Length: 246
Image (cartoon, rainbow, N blue to C red; front, top):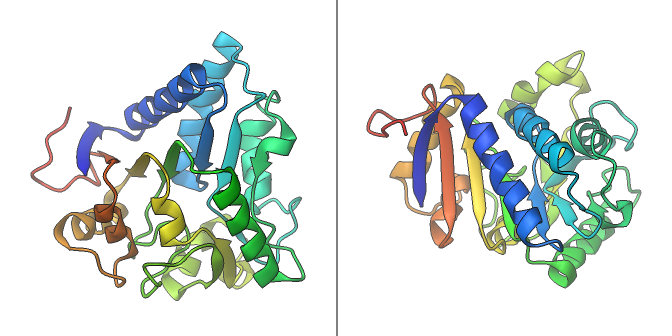
């Protein structure tokens, strides 16, 4: 695992956008694992700029999102369907909609939906690059502490800390969904390459825990130690003291 301090969210986001662009440029049938949230907004902004400047053909690129809230329709402003359309797919509308995959958190048969998405990942994967954020409690995707290390796509009960952290996107904490559909830890590890981003003082302890613990279900991010090709990019605020800035 490589952990590199790129100094700022702007520089790290631009670097990852370049890596995603290069993957799609070199491999027109790329499969990308995408994440959402505040950590990723600048990544997609820079990616759209690169795609527009070069008018890259992405019609054969396939995308797989990590997760989706349970109970929100795709049109809900806080759903991850809505987020992805707003920051990427509507901004560069050349992606083939049939190749965009996001779990359906509004399904009336959630367990069946988790199985369907899991089967899709197995049939169409593995993804070439999976991008990840990290929660303050060490979660990746929505895999909270205590998640089975061998988990595949499943229904997750969100912890109070995750609900509290995500409440900034909702009118009140009570509006935050209590569950999500999420790729499991084993699902994430199937990616050929994993890039994790962490920004800000609030993520510093999570990065410290990731670096200084062996694989344990109490800190879900530590499962990444079991993968041979993981890169972690942080800014000054999230960097542990001994990580030098590039």
